[in-house]
Image 1 (cartoon, rainbow, N blue to C red):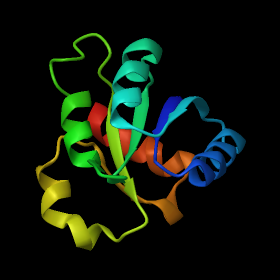
Image 2: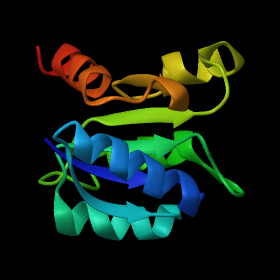
Image 3: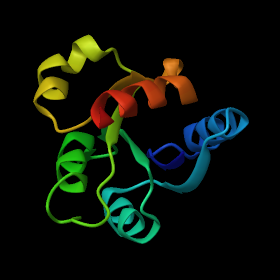
Length: 122
C-alpha cells in the first residue's frame, strides 16, 4: 500500500511515517499544506491519502472533498481523515465528507488503514 501523509506537524509526519513503514506501508510523500497535497496526489497517485482535519488555517474536510472530486479523475484514491481530536468532536462533518473514514492519530496503523480502504473498495 502506497500512502501520502498530509499534516501540518513535521514531528507527527516523521512519527507516522516511521510507524507505517515498520508495518509495511510505503509512505510515498509527506506534505504540510493543501496546495502541496493537491500537487503531490496528482504526481504520486497514492493508494490512500491521510489528511489531518485541521491544517493550520486550512480545512482538511475541504481538502478531502477536492481530493475525491472529478478534479482528479485518474488519480483519485481513498482519503482517510485523521486528528488528535475525538471523532465525536466532528461527527457530522466526518459523516458528510467523502472520506473513507476517520482515524484518531493515536490509533493509526497499517491494519486500521487497510480496514477502512477495504470497506470502501468492497
